[in-house]
Amino acid sequence: MPVYTYTTLNDPLATGGTNAYGINDLGQIVGEYGGDGGFHGFLYSGGTYVTLDDPLASGITLTPATIPTASSIAAAFTPPSTLPRP
Image (tube, rainbow, N blue to C red; front, top):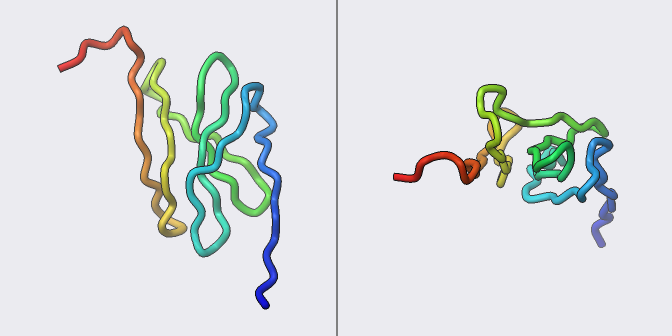
C-alpha cells in the first residue's frame, strides 16, 4: 500500500486563505493566497513559499494553475475592472 503525506498549506502572508491548484512529481505546489488587498500567486517548494506576482502588472491577479515541471508554471491572470476590455 502506498504511503502518502498530508501537508497543510497556509501561506504566511495570507489573510484571506490559501488555495492550491497544481502539484508536480517533485511535490512543488502552485496556487494563490488572499492578502494585502488582493490575491497573489505562490509556489510552495521544499517547505518555502515564494510569491508569484508580475512586478509590472498593477492590480492584476496572477493565478498559477499547473506546474508540469520544475522549470515551468502555467498561470492565468485577471485584470482589474478599470482596464479597457476588447
